[in-house]
Image 1 (cartoon, rainbow, N blue to C red):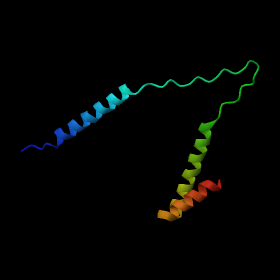
Image 2 (image 1 turned 45 degrees about the horizontal axis):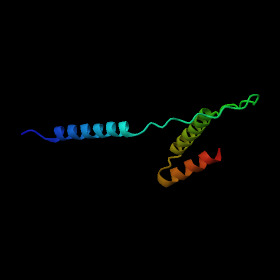
Image 3 (image 1 turned 90 degrees about the vertical axis):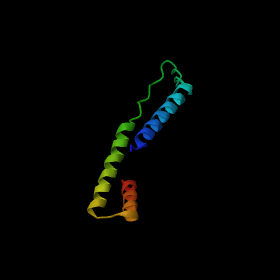
Image 4 (image 1 turned 120 degrees about the horizontal axis):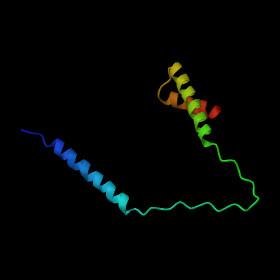
Length: 89
C-alpha cells in the first residue's frame, strides 16, 4: 500500500507557490520617491558609512560570544554577559 504523504506534500507546495505568485502579481509596485535635487552650489554630504558600523558590531558580538564560551557561561548568565559586553564597547 502506497503512502499518500508525498502527494499531499506536493499539493501543499504547489498551493503555497500559487498563492505567492498571486500575491506578488496583485500587489502594486510602489515606485521609490526620488530625492529632491539640491540647490546649485550646495555642498554634498558624505554618504553614511553603515557597512563598517555593522561590521564593527558583528566583530564585537563575536568576541563577546567567544569570551562567554571560554568562561563556560550558558542560559540567562550568557545572555546577560553578552548584552553587557556588547554595550560596554
